[in-house]
Length: 156
Picture 1 (cartoon, rainbow, N blue to C red):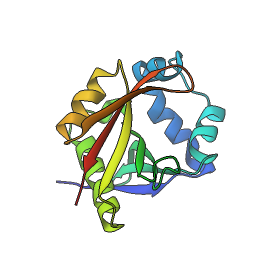
Picture 2: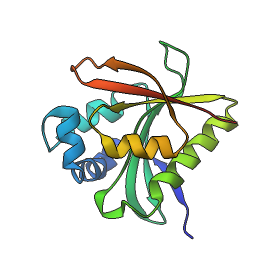
Picture 3: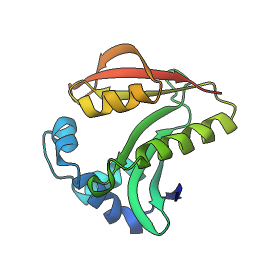
Picture 4: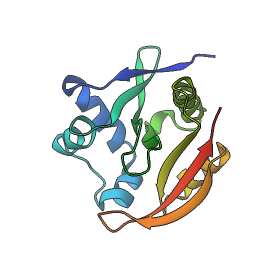
């Protein structure tokens, strides 16, 4: 079986991230009330922040994106902001492989837990993260007014 790996996202490869994100219009509508994300939005989200933004690659193919904070200054936990697989590659276990790679990276850093937030109405994501061992620990509201369910998993 082919394994996935991460490749750093750059301004020059941002259009690939846009294509991956826009292959999931249902998520975009939940997140931003719009099924399409612009290149400017991609740059602000992935290149203008303190997060690590990378592609999920399978051999030479870009199949997804991952974006995470190694330490959230608010609670000092690592937070996985986004793990998204291109719609053409969903259902083949690549999300599970990519998450395992991320979790392993966090364990190698000596971290004991990982946190993430899921939009309340994103039922596919709730199922996926619960299947990966995540447990709901609180519900909150984002700056844009979306209800977010916060999950945590103890690792290592």
